[in-house]
Image 1: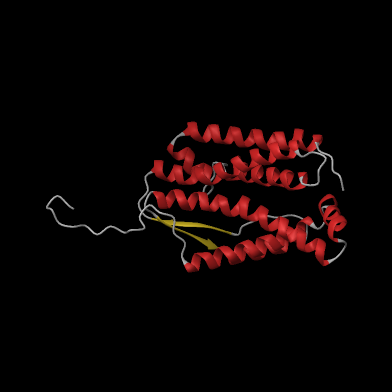
Image 2: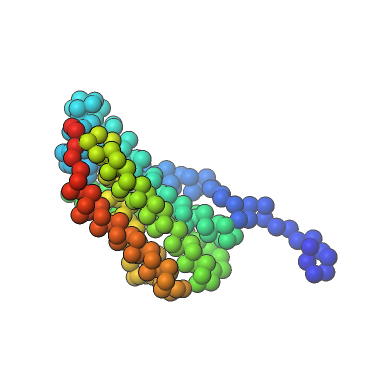
Amino acid sequence: MDWNGNAIHVNPGYGKARFSRTEILHITVAVLVLSLAFTIMYRNRRFILSYFESVAGEGIGAYAMLFGLSLVLVVISFMLHEFGHKLVAQKHGLWSEFRMFPAGLLLTLVMSFVGFLFAAPGAVMIQGMMDDKTNAQVSIAGPAVNMVFAAIGIVGALLTNGNPVVIFFYLLASLNAALAVFNLIPIPPLDGSKILRWNIAPWAVAIAVAAAEFLVNMFYVSGELYYYL
């Protein structure tokens, strides 16, 4: 009811998670192409491919398992990052949907053949009125997801050291720590610039945690791990 007692029609989906058919299609294509790119890149990481070859033999079986690993890592590391942005934006009543970048996906696929990925699968598009605080909350949600999974990866890698499953945890930590640090760089249009625009304190805490995870994984976890292959 408004101030005059008249009924006001409210969108029943306001503040709730919603996925359109178009968005689901874009998510599916982005995930599959990005997973293929990671499979191509990881095929040259002998400690990864050797394990799958020891389980499934050389050939399509090993590559199918490698694709499965890549698929899980892509969904956790990239898509949950984007869903973090999306769900927080929708919680604030904003229109928010993922859209793939065809040129970015093509570039990612091409770069995978040279053993290096600059992954640009797409991003969450947001429309609606946002103040700096809301924009910062939406922006920090993505890197926060990566920081959580980086921590899980670091702990998991140390706990499963000596077991082949350590490969998954190590890659989970490496990928998410790198994504968190990169996205928190305070340069537009990266998330860090939007957080810093509102308040330096949450940005400083976030970048400190992300950088610590990145350094711990690079200089400590990597040195501690060994593999049963």
